[in-house]
Length: 217
Image (cartoon, one colour):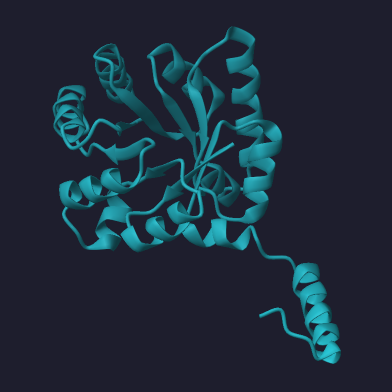
């Protein structure tokens, strides 16, 4: 499973990238707002740092506006993925932009039917929002599984990009089900290395090592 980092914070991306943990980056208007930076400036900097796809989201609500904004965002770098919402206008924009050979990430997906439409429109990525479904007492992983079955049934090449990830359990479950990509905040990716038994075992090793009185260097 590929790891995308869901942030517009350059230092957080740089740290994980140095460890080989970044296959791409996703941003959205909320993340751009949190960064406090100009969208084109910060997106360009991310694209220079990361070789993989970098999602930059349009903000127009009509297809024509999304297409125009998408083409403008695509000028930033060759690895830009244009992000559009899963509305009929978003699907129209997806079809046009994907036919032009551009990567398109269709976001705010909450049903298998929506994901099927996005694949038919030529989306490069579909972004089902796991955490937001969990928030309304639905199991977001059921959606990932349904999409996986449908896409595999018909050979759709659209990649499932598990989004709105809130926990390390979300990462594990997405990988088990077969999501192609998971995009998560840096904090969640860092938490994946944590385990109480690892900490306990390391503490025991260090105490035993101190008793030997030895040094390696």
